[in-house]
Image (tube, rainbow, N blue to C red):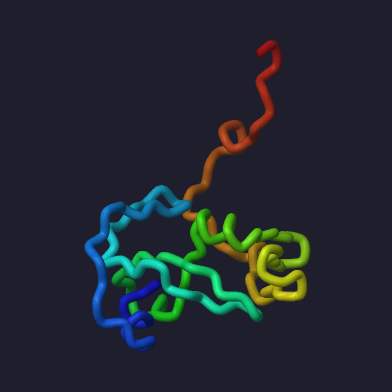
Length: 123
């Protein structure tokens, strides 16, 4: 969560960060602080969530990055064909169709021979 969004939501005090956040493009960043056990309301359920507070440029002010622990707790199912994220452990009818997975830019471009998971012949 961005520091600007955290302040907009009324958070003023943050714990000291103990990790560096690594992104899919292999870049990393040290958080500004941490919010622990924030009750996030999704549908009719409350999910305890930890947020790493990041200092981002203004264009990323309202962005949230959902990490693996949250996605696992919420039972996330990502349907790339329908551009849909469903949270199965919350309520089956809670889904978020506005995520556009197909147009997400990839910061790391690998050559075709490296980016495939097919074993080489004779291996």
